[in-house]
Length: 405
Image (cartoon, rainbow, N blue to C red; front, top):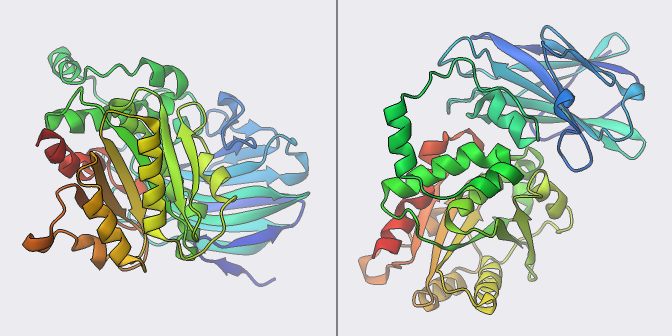
């Protein structure tokens, strides 16, 4: 039987039988695990993390570097099985450089393989693939998404309560006291409703504190590019991870636990929201309601301005606008930036994707036509792999200068 080689983002049908997913890692010691997810994109309980200390759950088992899924035995409330590889926590500083190779076997024969592009941003855990229901059948999707937050950080994003990294050294009492002194934001609500966001929220709070705007408030908005070239980044959870980091930032700036999300697609931008109590898998749920197309960035921006003005908010607005390519409505974008300078709205264009972004990078290149309420941050092609401290520095640096002025 010929083996099919999958590319990142591709999917393929599976036979309704025993499926073995074997992982080969070069260059470091790694653990293989699986997550069983319900229809809401989160685990049903902590038992849905299948790993070496809990190797069997509802038809899914882990043995060494292989995950076995007995597809006919999976309960009806399990909609996805996510396959993970994580650097051994007993090897401090170990990160992925060469991507693991995944081989998928059914009926005793190798039928598919997948090797993601190599990593270069300190990734310590990789989502290799996911098995997912499509009607009464099962399919596999090649993901290849790396993260720098480790297995504990990724697992809590899916609702798993895991023990802290055993290799993390205790923080001295004096250091803890200093950190707490500059992070007065009350994260009690976040700890109760979204514990998986607690670590990035603290990182965001530290970035704000380092720039002298702790305790300042702003209404955070998120605009997401939904052009066809972004499809792979939605399917690989990159956009979901990005939205979660913005939500964690908003917990430090706005106490309502909600970020309005606007999808830029076509001439009618789709507005919804992501909240502390619904964020897991939220972007995946929402974006399927939006058509792919060449979106009008200016229309999405106008939608954000209108929502902000109608809300009656007195705090400034921080509009994080993710862009994946050059806009076709450049003149309208420039006009909007100029007209909103006096409205208390700060625009941060965050670039990630495969398109050209020269327009956004050069918005403030001319001294005669600069925008004091605009900045650009290049988050690379994989923002989820950028370490939290560096990510939030890029996200809040220009915004903090604007707030102080």
